[in-house]
Length: 223
Image 1: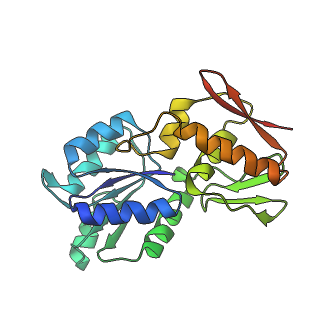
Image 2: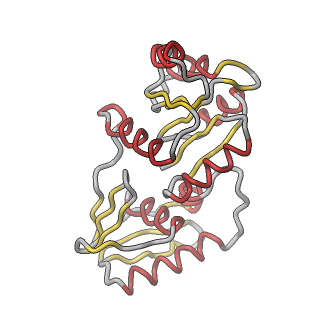
């Protein structure tokens, strides 16, 4: 899952991005509406987390701009402006949900799952490849109903490959699924994640193999 976080309090944004990262979520962060507009033109997000008080304007003005551009990504407003009339303004302004600060990360995750379950925003159903079953919404991986524990980045690589099984996935596509746009990516980082993932899948008799397509990317095939 990839989110866009629009929040001008950097300390809060860093903490939230780290907490979401532990849940297997890649988060792109920006502090302004102008940069958010550019990021939504360049990328596709599963959800957007939006503050209201931003340096270049009221966050709610961003919602109709996105909708006019045909972007239907669910938006959760995260704000200290949490009086009943302000929550009504947010929901009437097009937000899919409205969460007052401070909040628990567990509540935010529950609200994310709720908006992503709605038919228009429905994420992929469970993915089965080989003996592996992946739940993209909860980021759970099992082999014959037994949980397979994977580090976050390896799990995101596996999900990106499994969604396109039997097809070559470009390195750039895999990197976008694993890293946010602010992170510096070492030249061999992706290869290292895939090497460790390949060994874990082999040790677990997962019934799949990750093949390198030289100079292009990787491909996941059932054995």
